[in-house]
Image (cartoon, rainbow, N blue to C red; front, side):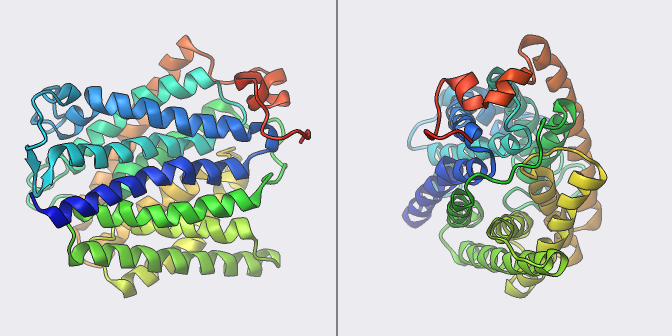
Length: 392
């Protein structure tokens, strides 16, 4: 065990949990109407709790167990046989488990943004749990667990390069979000602006800080690679924030607070897969393109495709993660075959698993609340609470 590596990953684990609670909760909560803000908080909080238990029970074993190329098996269920002295690299295995658990929390939590204001709470929990185990965990094994898409797998000695989750986290969550939005259908009123842009900014700022643990921690060591990952993460986020705001100003005449912080998230998602393979100049390029590309993707999904992916999960996270994964090959840090092939394989797998789960879970619990519950807001109808005294 290396003490410095262990200390850093303990901090990084806390930072990645901080991204979901309270970062993502505030970011998403501020974007919805006032009568739905508590439901968003509830979704993020309940998902964090449920994924933690499921990751312990089965998820970690499926992702990082010693199985075959497709899945890790169930040999490490409930961390049976794992002690405080067992190591993964230079880290205690229980710490590696905890760090990866925070990724398993935020990935299904990202999907929340697609279905807010109209989804059934039972569906959220049942779908998220099954999706994490049957979609996310196998993809983790393929990419990070030495499985199908890793070095020595389907693409030979040069496996896919995905440092912190452009494919594993952002592509899977983005595609699942888009599909749920299609099955749900649009909200009955799509024109209401975010009820609290201040929450959105605070949540985005927390996500930005937490992302240093997300990307920097993925080095799994306290060394120069972690420092570079942290640095390029910041550069991409800052650049994408500015290009989003500039593009918004050019197109609409004003640069908004919600816009600039959404650009931040686009830059963070785009640099995530590449953060261990590029330097500051490449990060500047990735961020500059991401701020415009993801904004145009928002317009495409909303207006051209007329899909109510409410908080633009696919356009920001999905497109950003896919773009960053491709840029690894463009900058010569990975092979085109492995990068594009892995995107295609994971994309098709995610689509199939997500559609099947939507259909199956929908047989058990309603996908969408009724019109009256949607009109009154999910805070009151699903949870019996209101965030504010005034009606909105």
